[in-house]
Every structure is written in structure tokens, then in C-alpha cells.
Image (cartoon, rainbow, N blue to C red; front, side, top):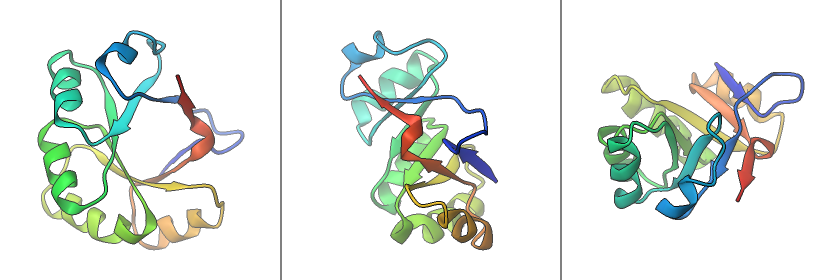
Length: 125
């Protein structure tokens, strides 16, 4: 299970972006994070950039996988179904529950979700 953004566990920061122009402003050791957007996904994929996406439903999840996302950030209501789809279709990316609550670590572990990302690991530009 991946744990990103928990104190004392090293992690790579995620940088929330909204446009292609903002990509140049992100540190080279950071990971791009944006809401599902085909134009941004296509650009990041063709530039061989690692990126994570906030996905809101299964359709976005499936398309995000096809577009090469490394992480799929989901809320609790989508996490279990998203993980099932990712497991059934052998997605390359990881399903990550977005959280601010440490007790969600147990939810993620008991439901075999790939990981959890705490909001403190997400930086704004």
C-alpha cells in the first residue's frame, strides 16, 4: 500500500496545475496533478511526463488509464469500484484515496485500495 503525504514517510510532492503553461513552473522532481482533461493528458503523455489525475467517475478512470496516468486520485465514494476496475483490467497506474483523515489508512488497507494521498503532499502553483 502506498502512503503519500504522511509525516515521517518520504514522498514526492504533487503539483496541482490547470494549464500546459504551468507545467514549466513545476519542479523537475515533482509530479503533475490535474483534474481530468484530455488535452492536458495528451500533452503530458506525449512529453513523457509522469502525471496524476483527479477522476470523478469510472469513465474518466478508464480514459485516464488509456492516456497514461500514473495515479488516479479518487474520493471515498469511488475508491472501491475504481480499484475493482483497475484490478480487473490490470491498470498500470495506482488508485489513490484523497484524504485528510489518518483513519482512512485503515479503510484503504481493509479494502485493498492501492494507496492513500494526504492533501498536504499537494502543492499549488
